[in-house]
Length: 215
Image 1: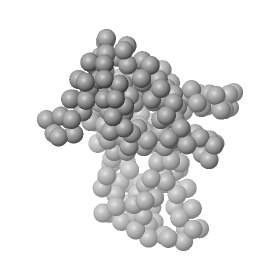
Image 2 (image 1 turned 180 degrees about the horizontal axis):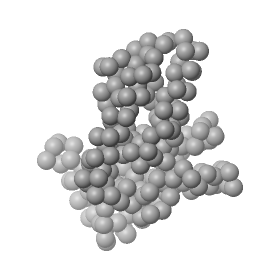
Image 3 (image 1 turned 45 degrees about the horizontal axis):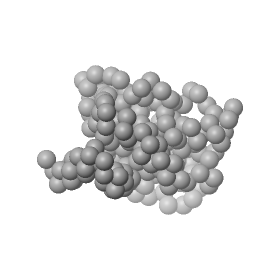
């Protein structure tokens, strides 16, 4: 067991024993990954109005309130449970702020078949733009971002979600399969296909070098 995994297991054991401080520390240890998930899935219409830190603060209140339920059942690995509650809180905040404007189409298939916001192609394009080796001028970057976003939109939605989970949220293949409700072998196959498609997309996009494609 790695050092981080071992420390997390110790903290989880303490939290299961009723140590609220250990639960808070566990949440903080996972904050970085959760924040990436929120940034990817935060509706762009709410950027500037809703900060990922606010989402995580509200999510932690749910985590603390519902932890006894988790302790009784432990149906999910702890991080996937944190991720699920955080995603549900984000979806709730989307509905609160957007109301009828909330798009039902852009939803991830989640662990409980509920609705977690899907990572947007715009957010993914922005993250991939960090791999640019040239195209520093604003106009060129804007054009390149649009091309990358359009290309991402052309990918199979489930393949793209597998890519997001594996490379941006850093989930394992088994975790990815469980999140999406598919077999690990299917998740692995989709991952390979998505990587090939992304490499094809980026290799044809000005400003991306071969070395910048390897995710």
